Image (cartoon, rainbow, N blue to C red; front, side, top):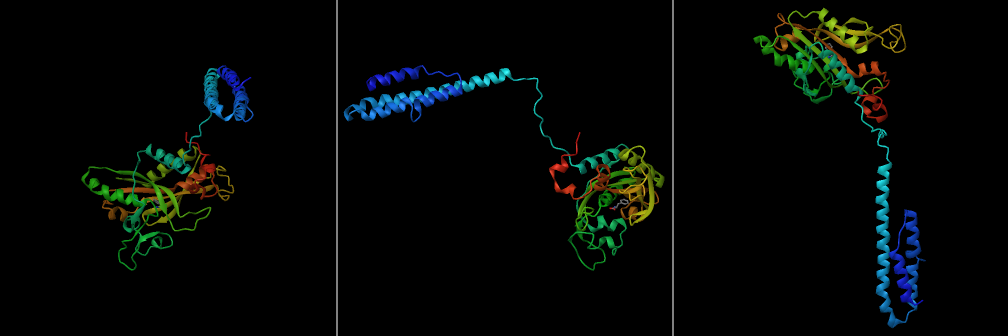
Length: 356
Ligand code: PHE
């Protein structure tokens, strides 16, 4: 067979290329286009052709190779399309999709929202205020004497501090959200006086800072929800009733509370509230150190000095306040042993809290 006849023969075979699978197609490619393939062999034959005749074969041979390559690519494309169509036809459209990993809300957000939700059902609304505060709103208006130890460097992170002044004007990171309460009271004072507003009933959630060494049980920042209710004739019984309602809603209907006398500069009388241990039910366990009670918040009747400092007439108005740590409540609810887990953003920890 002459080279010309051979080219014509292979060209005819290329015209008839067909394949029913990618494997068959690959076999065709190897048969014709690989290093030992038929078309490659034609190029080998070309070498033996006398120089003057070479030009005559070179072009048809190149064309043949291009055609074979194009045909193989075309068939590959057709096979892929057919497979895609088959896949759709045979897909089980009733099958449930793979689960999508959705995020979970942070446990502290969940607990904060739950606290807000419980108190909002008895008329409390949320008030907000700055984390970087002045001395007056964090301490001054709250009846802290200028030399009160809570103002000390050991507890407070100061942003700007002036030593030895009569009336501190320091800028600091708030150590409690009672600072928001002083803002709410001073802003509402005028409206209370004119009768435009009859009472104050706010919750102050937010992050607070204290200069403490970080450990499993303490952190240099944590979260609080504080509450304030001011009206005419607010009594300690009102405070106790609101807190009992909260404890039962948060920890279950069987929960009991007890109030122990305590001291805060801004409340008089002041108390600390314990709930019956929600782990052992009050019989005594390691968590409650065998006492059956766990402390969850501080509270008291707003000191008349605080009302007066904020411009509210303490002969007309009285009020109660309370404040709790969100981490503390979350620990009781979820039994988290190490406080640091709340701020480390470890997905293995966070993923355990279902949002809905
Ligand atoms: N502000 C107090 C604290 O941070 C909590 C508190 C609020 C106590 C209101 C009594 C009344 O510890």
